[in-house]
Length: 430
Image (cartoon, rainbow, N blue to C red; front, side, top):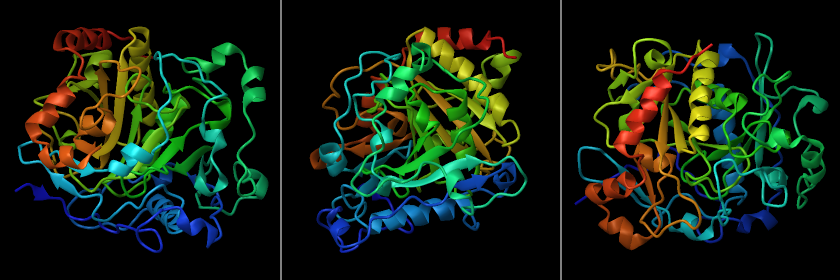
């Protein structure tokens, strides 16, 4: 009998239980965006993070989870997150893969956009996150310039995008898009921004787990789904602002099961230890990028790994972005996970510590067109060991062996991965 995963701590249900998760909207006032969450480096949690023991929630955890719960209670999601229709189980085997039945996400989520290439430009005529209603916005995320940080307390003019009346969407972006040079819709249009703009945290209306949000960096720029320096820094800082090792942030490139071509990353709380948090690593080389970038050893995937202790965010972001540029030049799709993890090396000095952040990057085979009929799609969640399964029969029959076979079909071939590693090791970092 497969081991059943324990229910998520603090699991939440919409008010009134089952049925249509949006049914409460007519009975309750829809939530409005919260005041901006303002933070500085002093808010980074750089010690005392781990799965054993207990630690108080950070400011970010409290702000995110409370705002998210209010929207769950108000029926802002497409389906309830907990209950008999969404069981989970750990697959028997050494890899501790976690399978979750999420048939409603498979059937009720917004249809994925058609993607034809890794550098597909942003299309203002397609769905994008400037069009989400106000009730789905949690709050703007703002990096402060001083030493004090707080939630809210900002003048209205400084509190990010002004919410629109319920039922209205953000203005159509055609005029903004046409006013920018075409180059700004391509790779890393603003590598050294003059002034950092707010990011947005919005709910994912088809959630995978508790606190499932979308991080939309520089939303007013209407960027395509290509990582930028600002987006990598925001993602890394978001993980450092949480004291919970269950909080993860992930990214799917075009051709790697991204569903919307508007720059965004996912964040959620997954209370299950993943092998990538502690798996041994080895550096690609002895100098330059080769010394800073590692590869996972003995893992069932082929991945590159970087690590940040919170004091080197810009250096780590620059290194990752140099690799992303190389992947795009080689037309290699990719997935990224940022998670609390052990320091890198063949033998982690403290296997229980999660004080730093591991950035795990999977170069992989590209997948364009319609999503296939496998038990699950292979994006950052699945590569990391969390498997949202589409149907009950597949959920019941899935084994570790069959899951690893599905994942293996999407990995970059070993020889190609080795060649890529050699190129990355030779990168010149400034």
